[in-house]
Length: 339
Picture: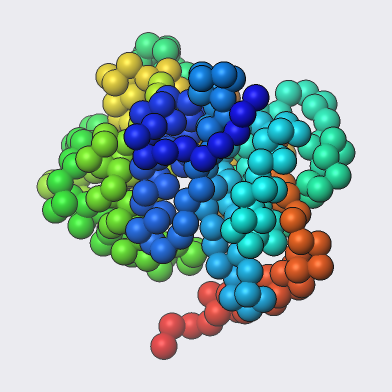
């Protein structure tokens, strides 16, 4: 097995070997536009590229070092971890956070028990759980598997005249950004800024990876979703909604129309991109989102989780302390009333 950096002319081979849009060559190009460095590695058996991975380099100026982030990459083995340590050290990384795109199988062993330099992340970035919708089912079967209240709300939106269409224009994307601003203010959660979303759209939409669905009521946009299409999967990546006309249940219809959209493209699975665990706490701030998605009757999925590959233990301990202080400040800031 040979693990080496990927050349630009190997872009197509690289993409064929990836299993998630956040590992795509285009995603790396987008992140480079935001000021990060992307490191792409190919895992070869002879001349055959059997797998690939990509991690980004994030500066942590307080201690003059970097952090690597590898979301939705391959399940690591000793050879992959050795290569990550090599390229992490070349990029002055304190640690590399890994979040493998692998479902947990039963009582599968914790990775930190297999490899001494892996530690469960104290602050996972990607959710450990999601819901999968099987798009190989008929529309009738997909509708029937929903909970009764969800079906009622979908029918209500249809009856009220809500219309969902794919709209990949910059004008439509501008409407999405306006709705996103409303959503973050209303629901009080952290989100990337407009420039981040604009760069993402400009990089991924020409390749067909990013697609935009908008739900309209009397011509007015009430909900907008950015979906990712990768191999035979559809992903709900970003969503935004209006505070107006919530009684017409536009977001409920959006989920069903997204399923139909994925079926039209011949995809096999719709990943709803995030959920809570199997016994969620009703007091969790994301409980409402979890219950909403649960209403569509998907399969609850648990991934292997998030791990830190530690390259510099003393700096890693310092980072942990500073990161706690940083998040206390951000949480306090988020609770303060607007000026």
